[in-house]
Amino acid sequence: MRRLRLLQSLFFGVFVLPLLSLLTYLGRMELPPFSEWKSTLVWSSIQSATSASISLVIGFFLALLLLSSGRRWTKWLMLALLLPGFFPPLMIVLTGMQVTDWLGLSSLGLGVVVFCHALMNVGLVAVGVYQLVVMRLKGMIELATVESAPYKMIVGSIILRRLWRELAILFFLVFSMCFTSFSIPLILGGDQTMSFEVLVYQKVRVYNDWNQALFYVFFEMFFVSCFIWLLPKQDDESVVTELLQFGRWPMPMVFAFCLAPLLLVLFSELAGVLPALTQLHLLSELGGHFWVLSFQSLYLGFAASFVSVLLCWCMGYLSPWGKLRKVFQGLSAPSAVVVGFGLMLLFGDQPYLQLVSLVLGLSILFFPYLYRWQLDPALQRLQSQVEMAKVMGAGRSQIFWDILRPQLVSPVGFIAGVMGFWVIGEFALVQLMTGKELTLAVLAQGLLERYRLDLGSIVILWTITLGFVNWLFIGGVVRVFSHRS
Image 1 (cartoon, helix red, strand yellow):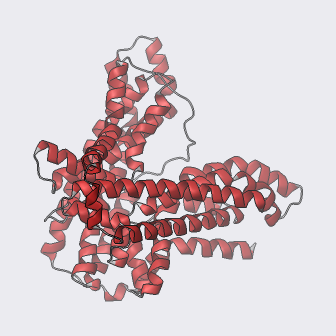
Image 2 (image 1 turned 90 degrees about the horizontal axis):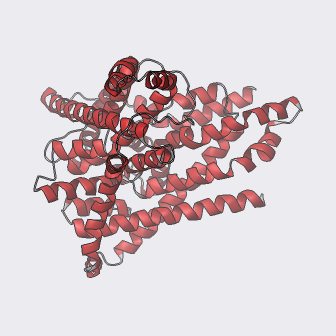
Image 3 (image 1 turned 45 degrees about the vertical axis):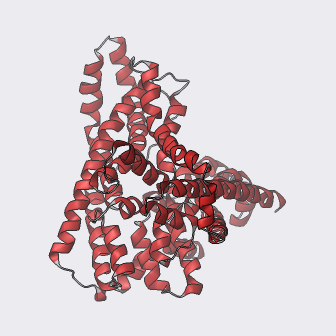
């Protein structure tokens, strides 16, 4: 038992390594001028509050549309709403720049940052509100519908009145995500620094002032922690499997609004790619560097996928029930800047350690979300089999090899594929930790910053293609090795 606890502690220690590294440098922290960080705090708070408010209002409306959709279409519409948040941030940035270009507006500043944040989060809010209504109010709404209660009364007196607390929690969660956003403000923020993440990046990569960067990292962590501390604790509720049909919105309207965010992202990508296909000679501007970056992107994605497979198997072996599960259920990956800056302080800027620290940082950033999304539900379904095996005298290794490993192949392969897909499309953390044009995503970032939307669209499309290639390849590798072992 002591050995198990030690292994569990070491495993958990990997995910708090950046934070521990930052704490060791706490004494070197230097207070920057008040006017500098006051301005960033004001702009970060304004863009976060605006993004969260718009996301909540539109998300609530989309949730009402979901509730009125037929049972046949609800799950598909939920998937369509969640996809914009699943795509790499580069696609959202491109959408924001294309839309502002069509409207003749500035492609930089508060408006486009808020638009991109709302585009990413409205689907998440809509699905969250829908699940809350089904879990908490299904019986009450069905009874009110039978009693012929007016639609407005059900929405106002039942949904809003009963769920105001949960809606406030959703607002603060979206606020904290926008406050710690890095990728979108980095490209679209313009002259105004709209995120502490961008300010830390500037201090590290532009001004080489690591001591003031430490202050901003700890201030951001303190600010976000206060929000999290204020949030009430929620019960551990299972995923919604039931459906509820309520309301009589016209189905064309339901489809139009629920599909609008996804179609806007896809149309923006096509609007940049289609004209550029007639000018493929533009790729000659990049030369052989383009193919070198393609290989490096695939290499980084495959390495992160491999690490995610190891993390999944370690989690399965270390009895992911009880305290370890509670810890990882509550573990939220720190912001990209906290992870990147902490590992930079730990490993330094040595080129031979950059790849190791980068893969580790990307894994720390993405794995907690993937664990809660795919691995934890799969492990919970197998808990009864594990308990039965223990009663019959099976040891830990036998349980892992004979029960867990064969039945976890599918979720582990999916996690590895998604990890590689996200890593290949990530540019902000790569740019922070290396300061170099190491991957295609960083190349696309530079093209978008220079308003080369035509060439940037092609590079983004190729980056996504490589992400799917890595996804299919790593999923096949996991299945083959699992069946042979």
